[in-house]
Image 1 (cartoon, one colour):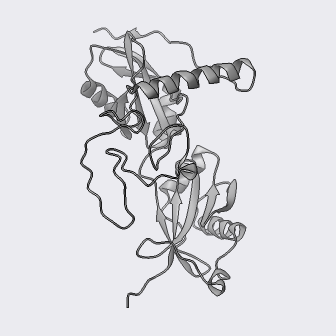
Image 2 (tube, rainbow, N blue to C red):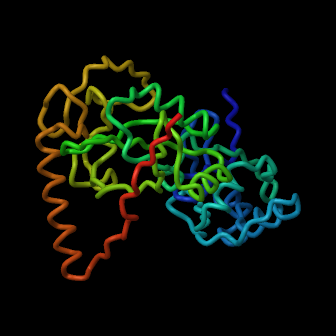
Length: 291
């Protein structure tokens, strides 16, 4: 007979939130009997216990701004970057709540709110040179990628994550970075209109909680079976048009039409006063460095 050890997992998400979920060593959800559930603290009680434990160890944050159960998961959230960075970087999390063991699972990626953009990069500069120059200036810079636009531009923009919050603020205050012989402006990253798509079947227009399809591989769209290992063929197939590209590829004609319609809807909502457009900084001139 296999022994199953119950414990708790806390996960910090990219939306400045923390989730607590119950699971077993086999990663299947548990249905605790009533007598066991009585020992699980309420959402408010659990958040207070965690906050007090963190504060007692010198981790200073404001109170959690989001507390509540989401299905079998307890969500705790903060609404500012400073607290999020503090929580993600802390190694002083409590190991138990009311005698229940907890484990911290930190995110593997950086949210868009910690992404910067270096703008108006001359097209003749190669990508690896741009990456090296950015990392020489910003040590914690990661995932440096050129932004692909649907129209031709005379210069390129590059986006990148900044994992260190002090570097993030310092670079924003400078407002510029030297690449090659040019001083180029740096701005916050403002994501475009977000697609509504399903992470279950990878079709656009709905979310996974409204999907009746089987779980599918993100790349090849083969059905994924629970507790059954799957090796992807790495042959992309589009869920929108059955083409030989990824389902959310910006070059897919269905995706292009969807984005165009989405843009029209957003513009219409702005004109009606239902949405407000962020005012971006005006284009800054490029200063050449001369020997």
